[in-house]
Image (cartoon, rainbow, N blue to C red):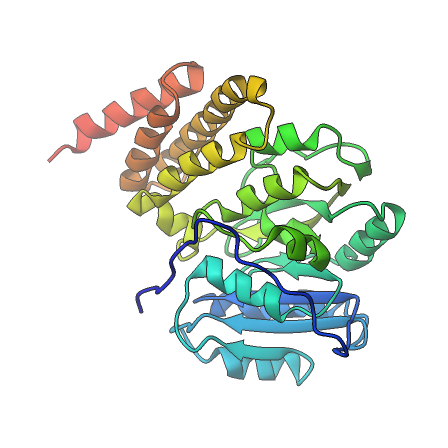
Length: 330
């Protein structure tokens, strides 16, 4: 089904929870689109640390998945504890996240995608962060990329080494994407102040983290308690093939620079493009040498060169790109 999503030019408003509506501490909202093979693990990772219905809302929000009966799985695994909502039409990932936030009644909102999961102790650790640092508008743990079967995929760098409010966070997060969504929890009041995700499809979370950092402190614990799954069906993987990932990242870089002092923007943009050039070059080598995905390696190596055309990693990307062109040119 084609997406009906249109990304707005300004953040959609998140209205407050109406008076008289019960407010749990937590809302764990699970946006889903064609992630049925992974959804059971996602739900079970939450239920294993469920503090009870009075303290935690758990709800799956399905964007008209066509890979199986999502409602039946939610009922089987959740046994009535997990709520289910199905969009009337396919709205796309960004608007589905907006729906999740609007339906959230809790004070702390965790958007846990239907193919990701959290480790034991996640919710207790994040709750303690908010209690220890009440000025924080959001809080996060560290995280890992994992494969279909949960094995660690890449050695992503730790966000920091110390527990507490992240230092120089706006500049750091504006230049580089340090976070994936399962690691981050945002106060609903922060979303009410700033609005929902917008602007891009593929880097919408990065832009949101920058917007939050521009106005609120962010608390952090250096424990790997969240897992972001990389597989062929997820939105990020598909976006590499159609070029949306590169285009949205370039737009996101431009959006993020607007939150930095004018005098810092040129240097920060150069550093951000360099970071993504190195990341894309590294990913291209992995796709070629470890996965044998020649076509994807060629696409990603080409995009690495579009971010920046200097540096050792980029030279490797250029060598790989032309090697593939020469060997497999039709």
